[in-house]
Image 1 (cartoon, rainbow, N blue to C red):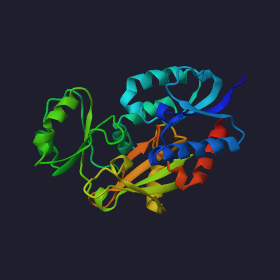
Image 2: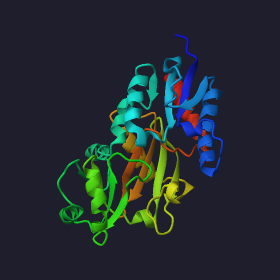
Image 3: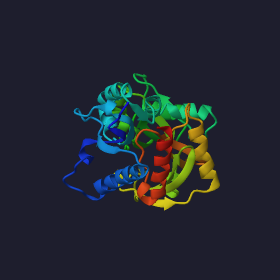
Length: 299
């Protein structure tokens, strides 16, 4: 079959032809450009478009690469329907089975069962009759973090203690009617040490960054004023990242593995991102080449 494209890089609409380019948009464009150039250097025909482009013929490309589709979490029913349709017309990287598994933080329990160290994690299923006060008494955690099991970008992520439980009870009850919620003890090293993110391509770590929250916050995302710096991972960090991807049902072609130190100063997995991870190729352009090599080898 003759394909018009080898790889279509998927983004969200605002990053296709942005009129206003601030520092954040510039980062997104730089990341996508580095990946596109790496693929093109290998003789591949590349296009970048938004995942919800109604005019594009998805059967015209050998594969699609989920990259900066960061609006998917707020539009998941629409995104899911699109994903099902597109997967019948072309290959999706990473595959849709991993997308569905990875979007729901129940996956942490799966990885924990495979021996990957994770923080203590309690999931409250939808429509459970309980309260934050009852949960704190049951779990025995003086400070806790509450977040939806399906979330991105820090949506509805709260730091809880006995002094503010009542203030968050209404939003907890509202959320639990519709979705599963995850509770973990607050890990103070998020503030003290930050969060390490390692990029894993083809099962091997390529580079890492360390993310730190701004003063007075605990969320490390740059959306909330967090900072990012290049990080040289040590052998323990590399081992955990590669253990996490190896524990997946199928080895992902690319992943970002986030890790933190728990309250006993032990390194644990905080998240593995297989859908549309920020990969910080701008800090390590060679990693874009590694990704391009992996894709080229599978086509």
